Length: 186
Ligand code: IMP
Ligand code: MG
Image (cartoon, rainbow, N blue to C red; front, side, top):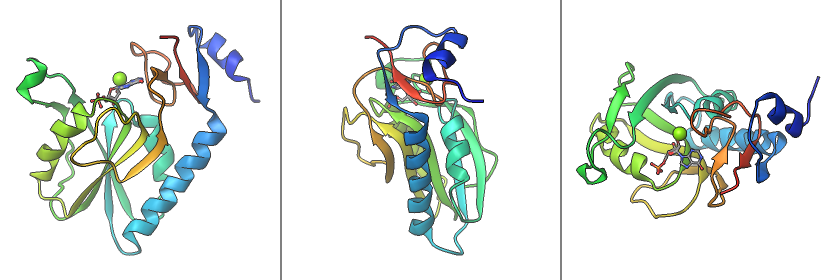
């Protein structure tokens, strides 16, 4: 049984959306392509550790890993973007830290969306300090608001500068389970 996006949203108790930005089909197609790009990048024999940034990446990661045809391991980390202090403290707190060791391994950090880039700018040096063999970022969406020292090697979509929900992205913890990506009226 399939239901329309409008019907799904009504059942989810969601607000009025501005528009659907990426349909379920468009996302599925692009995520499969990205899995292929990742598979070709590492080539046979490489083992890859895929680390999802929670919570936003959970649906993307689940789909992505099923399109990566390599030996992989999966882990997650939870980072608090703004820590306890001010933005200028330059700190990122890891609320959950992966138990799988990074040293000597090819690591891919999976992020739902790059907005200000603060999360990645703070997190990557911490992860680099663990001496992975390589460290890359795979982001489903990128708003290109700033340019980063280390840009994601793989980006699913160049996102519009609107507030997006669905496919893992939330608005106040709601709407993560929408199978499509939509924008809210701003
Ligand atoms: P950054 O640190 O500013 O790059 O923001 C990254 C995090 O902010 C993402 O992992 C999301 O959890 C959240 N975020 C940024 N933009 C959006 C959006 O449009 N919708 C939902 N969450 C967002
Ligand atoms: Mg969020």
